[in-house]
Each structure stands twice: as structure tokens, then as C-alpha cells.
Length: 398
Ligand code: HEM
Image 1: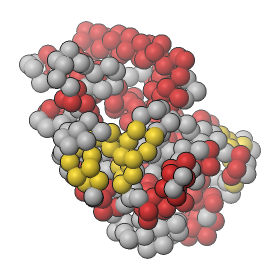
Image 2: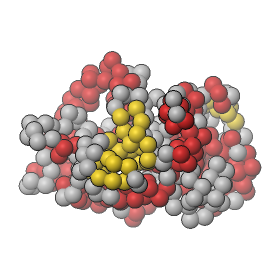
Image 3: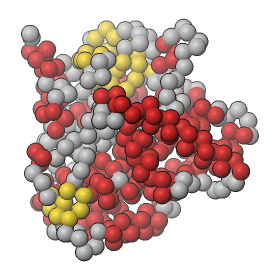
Image 4: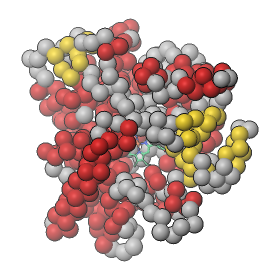
């Protein structure tokens, strides 16, 4: 076995899930574009250097719509989740993104500040007087799901159903919900179908109503795409932000000097959130594409149809781009991290995620300045699946 083979054996182990950065460092040095076996049995090229990641994210020879790879006209998307901008190439991408992007302009999002603060205060009030809190269940999860449900006009009482269904899809076929994944997908589709019927009867000002109006007004959005776009917003709108909040609180608690600095200079909150995004990006192995043609990339011959994954967390720890990348420094300036991707698929929800992160973290430490991790780091369980990076639970003493 050569050294690269043994390096690849260290990927996707429990130790790797807890701390992938030493393996990423080796990959960046020894084989920055590397062909590896993923836990789901597929092979993929993984790209780990910052410069290469940036280039690949902008390279439209890497495509998102895998149905284009087959001559079989019958080959379709197999999931409710897949007909949306994240899995579309030009020109469909532009049409689909255009339909929802109006709801995500920085001005629209800034207008949500007060409401996000209100939801945050209510959630933090619920923990008042308690000695302990599970940050993920009690705060990091409810905040973004309530926000996205309100934007979409979905009753927030149904949020736990979304948590189950989207966790199931995110963890995928090797996650803990593997046996129930089909059932969960069906339940999700049925729920959305009922919701769309209700909105058609009685449209409002919410985003689903606006999308349904565009669907009815012409051929801008198909029924399948309506399902795809709404499910993407529900899943992308909370799964990542839950982990932004969890990972940020964890990084600050693990670096008490940085937490003290933030407490004494609250205006550092924006750079603190950017640093938390860089240090432990909530997106793990999900920034994937397909080679739309056979091509050469950084000296590797990539065949048409090969799966290609840009590993953002590795790019964000590349010492050629970031000084002392393993140091968590909330004063880091102009960080240019890739946590939200780049190119045409760059995160549409970034202004919303940043605002939620800023309000959540500032308000949490204002309210609970003495919060401590109530577990040793080795007892924290990381989420399985390869899509998001974050812990399942974050027990804190308040
Ligand atoms: C795309 C990260 C929050 C909606 C992406 C991509 C990344 C990302 C890396 C690009 C994926 C790729 O190129 O393959 C994150 C992170 C978040 C976050 C780290 C939180 C910390 C959100 C939120 C929403 C959202 C709150 C919506 C409410 C989307 C959408 C896309 C996307 C719709 C697809 C854009 C396109 O293909 O044009 N996100 N995201 N994200 N994100 Fe986010």
C-alpha cells in the first residue's frame, strides 16, 4: 500500500468525522485532486486546495444536472429535492434562481432583522431559569426553521416534521434513518402537495404563494420544480444554519480568549461569524458536481460522468490562502472563505444565514455569558452523512 492509499484509508473514519483537518492538510500537500471511495460506495474526485476549489466552482464544465450525462430521455430525477437551481445548469439555473432571488436581496433580508430578533428572544426566554440547555434542540434548530417556515408561509408547528424528513434526506442511505428514508420522502412530498393545494385556494404574500403564481402565470416553473425549489429552501434554509449556530458557539467556548474579546468588543460579531464559517463550515461534502465532458484538471484526467466534490472546509484551511489557518481568530480581516461557495451556485441564502448567525450568537452570549460546554469534546457526537458538518447535540451548562 503506498502512502496515498493509507492516507485515503483515514478518510471517513470516526476520527476523521471528529476532526478532518489533519487529513485535509495531507491531501492538500500530497494529492490535492484525489480519487476516493465515499462511504456510500461511489467514487469521487475530491478537490482540497483553495485555488483549485475556486477554479472548479467557477468551471462550468463541471455540471450539476446529472440527467444530461445519459442519452436515455427517460432518465429522470429520482428525488423531490432534485429539480431546483442547485441541481440545474444554465439556462435553467438562471430562470429558477431568478424566481426566488427577489426574496433574498440584502435589503429584503435586512428587513427581517426585527422578527429574527423577536424569535431569538422568545427561544432564549424559554431557557430562562434552567441550568442546562441542549443548544441544538432548544435554540440552533428552532430559530432558522421558524424563520424559513415564516418566509414560505408554512405553519411553524410542523417544524419537527421537517426536522425528521430533512435529517433523513441529509444523512442519506448510510445515516441513522436509512430504513425510513423512502417513507420520509413520501411524507414530505404529501405534506408539500397539501400545502400547495391550500395556497392555491387561498394565496398570501409568502414565497410559496409567489412561486405558485409564477407557475400558474405561464411556463416559468413546472410542478416538479415547485416541489424542488420549496424543498431546497426548507432544507438549505435550516440544516446549514443550525450548524453555523452550533459550530460558532462551540468554537467560542473552546477559545475562551476569543469569547472574552467578543464580549468586550461586541462589534466584532460580523468577523466572528465569518471566522466561524471558515473554521468549521457547516457544509461538508455536498458541494458536488459531475464532469460534463472528459477533461484535464490539475494534471488529472477526469472522465465524463465522474463525480467531483469541492471540499470547502479543506479550502478554508489552506495555508496558501489563510495565515495560521488552524487558529480561530475572530479579528481575521477580509477572509474570502468559501463557506458559501462561489460562481453561479454561490449560496442564495448567505445574507439570511449571516443575519441569523449574528443575532443568534450575540443574543445567546448576552443572555448566557457564563455558558460552558457540559461534555468533554470527545463525547460530542458528530452528524453522520456527508452533507453537513456539526454535532448532533451540544449540551451546555448555563
Ligand atoms: C447553495 C452554503 C444557508 C439557500 C449553497 C452552496 C453552499 C451553501 C456552499 C453552494 C453549493 C454548491 O456550489 O454546490 C450555505 C451555508 C449556510 C447556508 C454554509 C449557512 C451557514 C442557506 C440558507 C438558505 C440557503 C439560510 C435559504 C434560506 C441556498 C440555495 C442554494 C445554496 C437556494 C443554491 C443556489 C444555486 O444553486 O444557485 N449554500 N448555505 N442557504 N444555498 Fe446555502
